[in-house]
Image 1 (cartoon, rainbow, N blue to C red):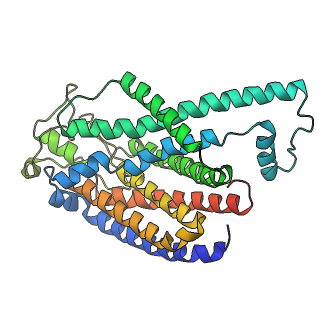
Image 2 (cartoon, rainbow, N blue to C red):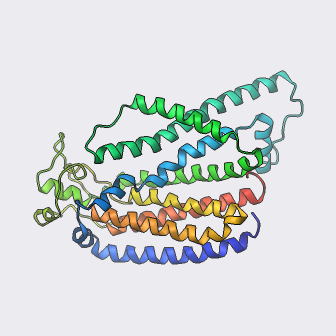
Image 3 (cartoon, rainbow, N blue to C red):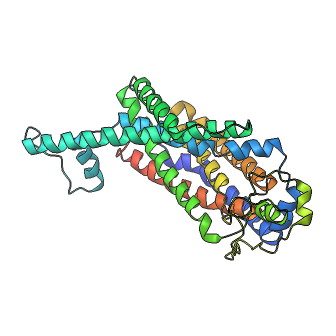
Amino acid sequence: MKNSKMNNKPLFIFSIIFYITALIFMVIGTFNDLQITVSLYNPDSLFARLFEGFGAFTYWSIWGPAFTIIFLGRRDLNESLNIIGKLIPAVRPVKNTQHKAYKIFNFILKLITTIGFFVLAVIGWKKLIENVIKNVLFMLGKDNLSQAFYFIFCAFFAAAAIFICSKIDKSKLRKIEALALAGVLFGIFLKIVEMLKPITNRVRVREMIAYSNGFLNEDGLSEGRYSPLKSDMAQNTDFSAFTPWYRMGDDMGIYNRADSFPSGHTSCACASFLMYLPALAYERAKRFAPIALLSAAGYIAVVGFTRLIVGAHYLTDVAGAAIISYSFFLIVYKIYDKFTEKGIIG
């Protein structure tokens, strides 16, 4: 990537401001987490409910487009060995491509990548399409559609997306492929953040409100999200299960969701930082790179704020998720920068 040091300057300044701001919120939340969430609690807020349903859109939208592009960029055996050779010099392409063994391995590789990446593309588009439709139907009070419908529809959708994108020029496709791979890597990192949630065992505010006010599911556990809770119910709630972010919680076996830290919606919203990469990849778009960072930060702030309003998270959940996820983004950016600069991908 050209002028890498110049590109790093706005990112460096933004990163310092982002971390300082997030750390300030972590400190404030450490001493006032419960009070802040309870004071903001308003489950009737349509604005907050919309972001609860669709705030993770940026994360859902990674997989389908990324695997569609990766499917189109699949390579034969020698091309793959050539890329590996840039990372591991000892690996060399096969000289005799007419050898029977090479043809067999090449056929197997193409078969596996064709089937594998198409399946991943279908699953990726399903994650986006199903989540959007499911949340729209939920807000309209309708039942969700069957899994069979989603798989069949998304298989046709993925095939159509592949056909349309196949018209992209090969050289342009390689640059987009690098962005797609960066998106998948960041998506995997965000999934790791999601996996941290059950470990902390931190009980959500709305789960305590639901249990104290008699809103239980069929298993006798609290049901915070899908119950008709009201903001004044917080006055009749036992918040003794609250724990600070740095201590393991104890849900006492009565709460449905004891996985508050870190905020999953906030980490998913951090996928919007991926807008920064195409802004750097294309010369005409580079002036929009700072705007991409600021827009992503603004979106994350809105998503995080709405998580407090619906009682799903605390301030430290949001700030902690932002710090962890943004750190992962910087790792992905550094890998993308080095790989494209050395011509390994893109």
